[in-house]
Image (cartoon, rainbow, N blue to C red; front, side, top):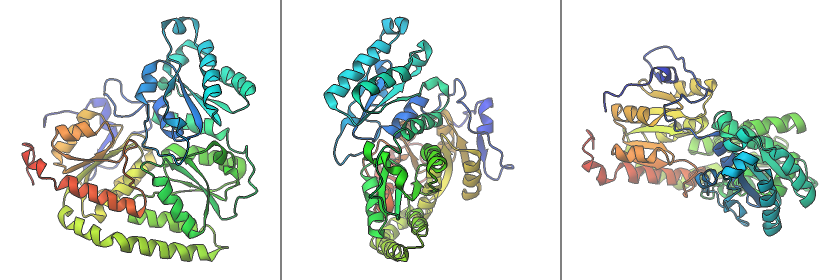
Length: 450
């Protein structure tokens, strides 16, 4: 495997820091035949909208699309769980020939009558784009008849990349904004965008803000509610966690409602503290918010710092490979791993921009491999060459790590353990420590270091 060569047309999307001036190609469609780890447009839209718990989510297409994305996030709900139902129009051959609009209308009306959702999202898949079903017209008709928002999500998979799916989701969600009254919204209030309540992370973050004295109007979309999104235009600030997924919605709300936004991360001690301080400083008219924030950060770090120091003793000098969806997450992971004394030897993302990769290049050490839209062969090649002790990624990277005899940490949306906030950093350190120091790796014939 050490003789694996990178595809010629992929070389511009791979950079070895220190070997040459930084120049990297990104933001383009996946190369045909490279078996990209990146998901499709439809999947991108589903992962954003899925956690809205009191909405109906109907996939208009073959059953495989719905099966592929069923329960796609470990997104918890404090109430309704309609989002966890995987509904599909299950288009068949005759529908492809004669059109699936009648089937969509019948499915929509039946499901709305049965489940009484607050809104409905209808996802258009590849086959729907090919046969030309007018999904928007059907949605408009059903919305008039049933009296709820029925929103088309134009997420045909062949339209672009996963990032285009994020945009399609934001376009649909924006139609809910501004529908509800904002009389009870505080002037010291925020919306949290791009937080999906994986393992209950939105609840952790919401409690931080409540302790600070900041009202959370809505979380988009973790443990989300249609009504909360409807009054989100009353918030004073949008706080964007997953910048790749939700920046376009923040930009739309800024243009339409004048709500400013900031980008933050809630992963790792440094980034979580910075996020809370950045929000607190946005409300200078209430200095008590900053005072409470300082106390919160100090107490939270003090509670977990002794354990982190113990974990660091065993993890000092170990090597990690990172491949995640958005580059902003990679920034936080690099800082968190440095807190644990670990070295990052590979860093990549599915949807990073040119600006993201320039920041990533500055953060990485000499010799680090930086990748955009990688495939399994490339990931395997560099994990082996860099002799990584740990691979951090998602469900599609897990088998790569285990086949190579490398510890794995799931940092994607299928996991069940919260990794956000200060307690999330403790959970992350604990998982990394137990994985990297497991005695099982001494049986992996490939490993040169114990």
